[in-house]
Image 1 (tube, helix red, strand yellow):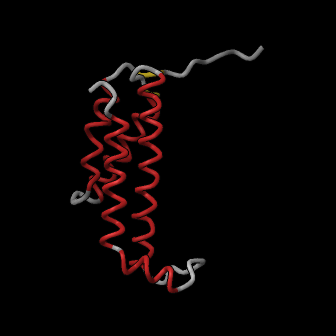
Image 2: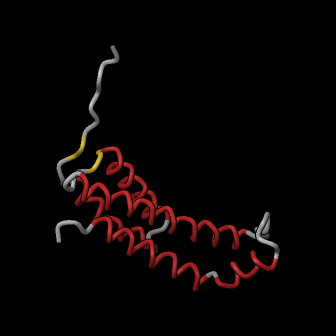
Image 3: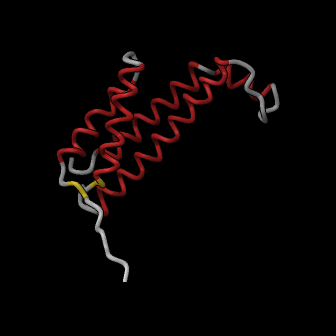
Length: 124
């Protein structure tokens, strides 16, 4: 499959979000019980919210990668590839027992593809 990277990241984001909803269900219920606004009452709930939000950000990244795959023939801005690599490396180092490992196939594939380098123009 030629265009798989975006779908891969979207699938990982989906799994991440479902895992969050299952594992932190009681924490999300406490947010609702406390009225949503300014309702984070513990470090556990704080972590649950960030876990959920990271899944949403990863979904957005997956959509962008998918767009680059189709619109630019599997070319990706080098800056995106490098930053995704750095994020993944930091995630694996800080939390080796996590799903960050699932991002490596996409990152390596992006880095091995022909990079899309920025075009610099001189203002007249």
